[in-house]
Amino acid sequence: MEQYNRKLLQYHKELNKAKTEGGKLPDEPQKPYGPGHRKSPSGLFNGMIAPLIPYAIKGVIWYQGESNVGHKYYRKLFPAMIQSWREKWNQGDFPFLFVQLHNLGEIVDKPPENAFYSWPELRESQLKTLALPNTGMAVAIDVGDVSNIHPRDKKPIGERLAFCALANSYGKKIIYCGPVYKSAKINSRKLIIEFDYIGSGLVAENGGKLKGFAIAGADRKFYWADAEISNNTVVVSSSKVTVPAAVRYAWANNPVCNLYNKEGFPASPFRTDDWLVVEEK
Image 1: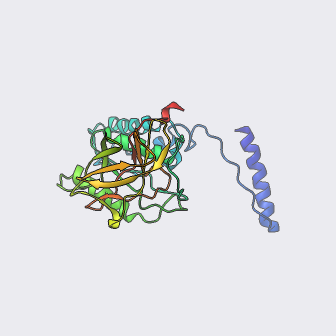
Image 2 (image 1 turned 120 degrees about the vertical axis):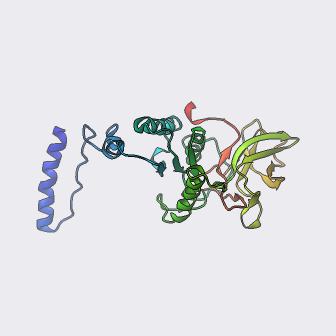
Image 3 (image 1 turned 30 degrees about the vertical axis):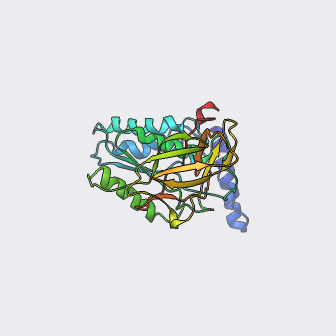
């Protein structure tokens, strides 16, 4: 703090000089993390959430996660936070709806690799959080912005959250999300993928060929796969993989993918394997 105060004094001197002489304005020194700092442990909670706890609550909409990419404990911290809020409010398991990370960045035309701390793994952590009761997730894999970490088109996200709320909180008998990976089984040289929340049926967007599926054998080397819809399952194969062991879908920061249900909700990215899971790093 003493060092910060010295830098702050120097900053004001340089600032006054720049304003007087018309020079470049100096950068203000960053206040150290400590008691009272908004980024100190529990700073945001104490400043922005704790004051709300005495009041009645219907539910939560949560849109966050970009800065958590690379955090190996996120899949434990996020559900722990939800449970903590519910305990603090003491009003039961109120609805907690959240937005899965959108697509971002350059499209890389190669099958997924076993990289740690990627956006796909953060999305997977969010997907696993649906194991908590009374939670819902809006998939945003198709509404991101290539160059903007905060995509401007929020309407589809808002609508998908609204459908989650109508179904989970207000008892409407509607389809409110896209396909979610359920199980996989091997059939000869193919993997057959089953889904929950298929609605009226699975479709490829705009009636084209399914995209975004990759397949690997025991060597864990992935290849782009041939994928087709059959009886509301997705059958995945590749001539380069004789004994399939795993399938990944939309497993990239900005994947090219197009699996939806007929109600217009996109499928969540997923993988059937647990190779190099994030906690192992």
